Amino acid sequence: MRKLWVLALALMVGTHISAQLPSGTIAPDFTTKDIKGQSWRLYDLLDSGKIVVLEISATWCAPCWAYHNGHAMHAFYEQHGPKGDDRARVLFIEGDPKTNVNCLSGPAGCNDFTPGNWVAGTPFPIINDDSIAKAYQIEYFPTIFVVCPNRKLYEVGQWNAAELWEQAQTCPVASGKENAGIYEFSTGTSFQEICGNLEVAPAFSLINLGSEALTQATLALEWNNSTVQTLEWNGYLNVYDEAKIAFDALTLTDSGQLSARLSSVNNKPADDEPANNIRVKNFSAAKNFNSLKVLLRIKTDQYGAETYWELRDLQGQVLETGGNKSVGPGGGGMFTGIPDGPGAYNDNALIRDTLNLPEPGCYSIHFVDYYGDGMCCDYGNGYYRLYDLTDLQTPILTGGDFRAYDDRVFSAGLLTATSEAADVAVSVHLFPNPASRFLQADFSLAEEAFVSMDIVNVLGQSLFRESAVQLPAGEHSKNIDVGQLPEGVYWLRLSANGQWITRKFVVQRQ
Image 1 (tube, one colour):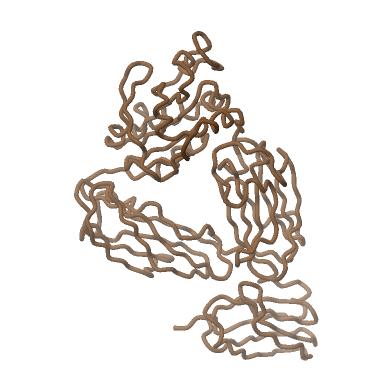
Image 2 (cartoon, one colour):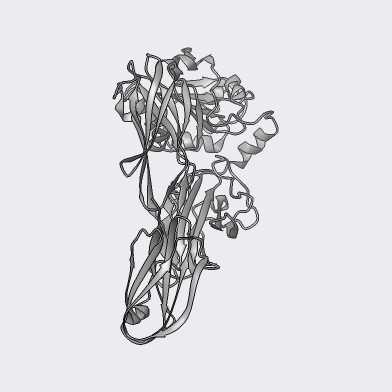
């Protein structure tokens, strides 16, 4: 979470006419001169393969001055400008029409306000041109854009040099003769954890980055290094042209790696830049809570009002909320300050909340940061931690170092067995697993017990239930017809004298 700058925002909102340019749009070209008289044209820089960072500020803006003196942009320029790897350029633009050029050099001759000398020690070009701020429809200072060589812009926050470079590396950069790349790879879900089934809809942009036209590509979707779908694309793309590619939806039931891969380009098995021919998303199994009561601890950073969260079931129904309701579930990544709203947390505060889950099953929790830099770490060491109430020492889910959103999935009341149950039901084995028509449950009792069992789906709903019967100690077997169940993940729960033991199984048909 970043600095609030209500003064800057208040001075801007009365003058802007149209909405600020959204990320992913084409950056307007401009030609201008810096304060030393050197000319700059944006598209010339982009056409030379440079990634351009635009820092649009005002001399009177206190957060702009603080960010400038934090030297994040200086470090980025030193590492990636002409004296570094020469892959990027930075243009600092004073965008307020009311201030004169003298304000950049200090109070002397400034017709407004400036806290100091912006020019001293700045290695990148400084430009005094409010027409650029107008063309980019700037609503607040500072506004920072990363502009890719394909002329698309992406707004970022007051990030450090490493974060800026992380965003810059997502830019497609042309090189070589035959060079196609996969960019903007999306799985169609914000989740990277699987509880039961997770449906993904993989899609991406196929971009030509070579001097030769792209006319053919073979595209493969892989799950754990095995090809599950193949697409043939034919068309005509000049350099930086792109085609939107979408695979069929796929259901994931366990942890693993999903990859999109280019296996041929212009009917050749490789191109000039293999590194951009594959994109990967990793999925892990959701964590489980033994209890239906989960403790949520939140430590805010210096800007507690920027935090909001929601607990939902898998149908998306909101069960509980916390934090600033003015932020809301879609209010992340605004790169501005927000005043306290209903429920807003204090700065550097510790919050404890017990989440009462209605039944065993899968749930998700969603955290939002209004500014877009999470709860940690540049402005305090904020975090969120979720604990099982049976163990308040070791958190099961933790987070806080994210940007605008963090979406987590977990299960509760499933896949666990108490030590008491283990004394009664020594073991439970299911086979075949996966099952197609019948599932056999073999279990061993250490002593006589009243035994019941049911089958639970990923939503915690009981689909099959057998009333308790008294059974003697020893080996037992139960044959269960699962032929009517849809393919997917389920849990068999066995109760022995009131204690539960749970086993996971899969229904799968050829």
